[in-house]
Image (cartoon, rainbow, N blue to C red; front, side, top):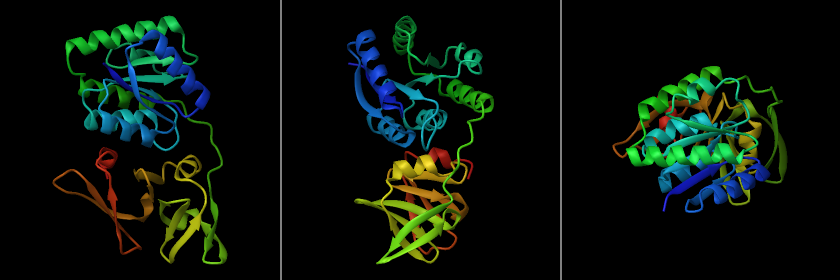
Amino acid sequence: MPRAVVAEDEALLRDDLLAALGRAWPELEVVAACEDGGAALEAIADHKPEVAFLDIRMPGLTGLEVAAAAAEASPGTQVVFVTAYNQYAIDAFERGAIDYLLKPIVPERLAATVQRLKSRAASGTPDAGALAAIVEQLRGALPAEPRRQKLVWLTASVGKETRLILVDDVAYFQADNKYTVVMTAEGEALVRTPIRELLDALDPAMFRQIHRSTIVNMRAVAGVTRDESGRGTLKLRNRPETLPVSITYMPLFRNQ
């Protein structure tokens, strides 16, 4: 039975895609339906599905970043981008290495996509090199996302005291039960905002997810090392501890 990972941050659109897949490809088993890029990448690495349906715009990691990392984490996974932006991608998609679906999903287009996926699966392992090349092309052609006001200050608890913390001063965020630890050079504080909500509010050019429970400020990183197993470790500039990088996320640090 073929397996799939579906990633779409909007719940209604995710449910619509799951329902449409159920009709167009009844034998397909959706092993994970994710609402952000980090969860999608981890699901792909864990399950190594035959296909991944990735929304291009997602909190944290974009669909393009997930596809680039998934090429190493699960080389046999075919990628289908789900997008509302058809004006910039058609030429790249039509080369055939990556398929795409436009929102809203049209049954006829989905049926054609399913047939192409089945044909490619029968012909062998996807071309990871072609996938990487097209992902890079799409990165340059992606329309600029409308600017949203990014998080600048946090109201956090330190014992019984409430403090304002400048986001630029945060070394990393780490999930801790019902709270999120906010770590600065001076020490830790706590907020109730979940990691996923922080990903959507933080500047993606500065903050990067390195584990399902950890987001790091790249300006606070002194260096990255990789061990023989492929896992990574971050050394911080103003903190003594090191941070583990999940093997799933290491491809995102290839140029660091």
